[in-house]
Length: 429
Image (cartoon, rainbow, N blue to C red; front, side, top):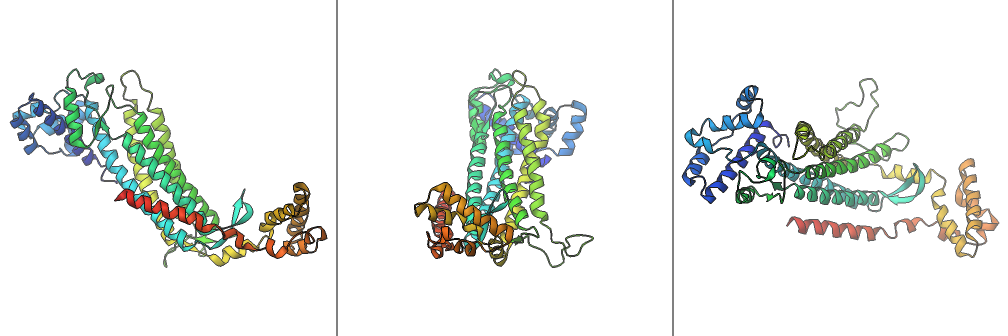
């Protein structure tokens, strides 16, 4: 990912665009084909150092690039940048970089998704307490929790792919986009050579809603990774202790406290998500520009486009590593289910009382009365229900307190997950 956004790679993509434009001019017979062939044979991307040296004089990056690239071309170098304006090169080349960087992001999502699916299968029926508002609710399984992550990652992939397709466009329409100095056929031919679609209409630049969509898709992916990492952080808390990050034999969790084993990678993911989200805001700010263009977007994009891709690429790598090596403690999960004295079964008792003919509010009050006692007195909820004649006489407590109901339909969700995996595999093929 760093190579995609390197200064040298940027100059290489600029040259690719310039040469593709020359191919278009040659096909139209405007520039002699033998001269274009000679340019292609001798052309090489100038070094970043040489361009920087010339830019100190020209105060213009593309002009410096064109001068540097033409130095090795002899007389034929006069055709370089023929009919083009700077943004023709900048925006079309940026589309190439985004395409290449996006492919790496999609690969990262695929690895993360595969890791989540494997761990979900491993813990398909591992019981754990579900929590709402941070409070014990009803049991679920760790595998089911992970299936939610898997489907969210799949949506992230679709979202990123869709945004990348929206940026798979180029423009060689000249100053203010009128094609006054460049034939539309040149644009079509050049974009075809580059694997891009010509923008149906442009000003001097490609419109920045495309770029904002990409940054937004990256930000949403980062937000999902933060959500997953935040869950891991909670489950790793001492009071919960249901999972732990991988921990190397010689790793140290604290310079002061040797016992520490902190969720540092999950915290890192959460922190970087804030950076990527902030970059999405810059993308939105870049949409509104003066008239056919100004360059207020340019300086910001030089920061946020590489940074957003690099940060998310790193986050995906670390999240996949974290998921693959996550230490899971099923016995602690079971202890936590039991820690609330059986209160996780309160809804089953409520429904049984309703089925017995009792009004819902009356049933609710009966269950709540025993539930509050269980919590306040640290008493077993089932025993209290059995000792309450208004409850015990109406329901089969053995059936009510059967936890198998919570995993009865796990396979339904996993069948959907398998269908997702099959669809993803077919898509890749």
